[in-house]
Image (cartoon, rainbow, N blue to C red; front, side, top):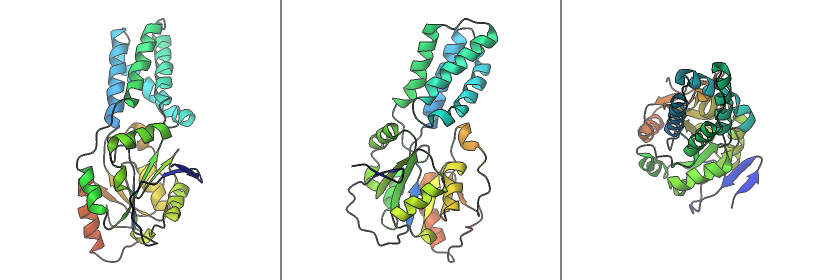
Length: 266
């Protein structure tokens, strides 16, 4: 059963494993690291653009306005399903005002239904993800740390079928160094041999490294919000183009010299 501990919603799959403490640990991001959600966002955005263009409005301007409202609405709605439909309503209203067009309720309804569809669709898994997790389980404690609306994240976790690979799953509203520190303390992570793996510098790498972890950035197509300034990162981090190469990377580093906190050159 989920437990609320220091703003961390913790799910403990029945892995039956007992780990020594402190344990080498990998903290994985979920969205666009283990499964692909950006294409759902892109697909919904393209569908709303087609609706707008069919109504005689400027599709390019729509993209600009929608993305601007969506970034701003992160502060109000976080990463839950209420944000995007709200952004669609605001963007369509503004575009109509700019073009001197009357807001049509039927168009508004189409836009909301299309924007909301991304949360109903199943996110496809990243290629080779099961093999990666299977390869790493013997040597690492695996923790899934995902941010966003708890109901949506639990839905995606269930649909992914990946829960069985993890010693723990943690859902948080957002990620910061304090969250990573609490996760490491909760699960007895050995910081000198532990990693954060994800697709976002400001969410997955920078705050984790500030908490004392090492980082692996898996480069992926990410929405503009995740390309915001990450601030000064304390050290260097690894980069991968594909998640499937992670076991080989960590094995190579483990055979090398003693870990340095600043990491290896990217």
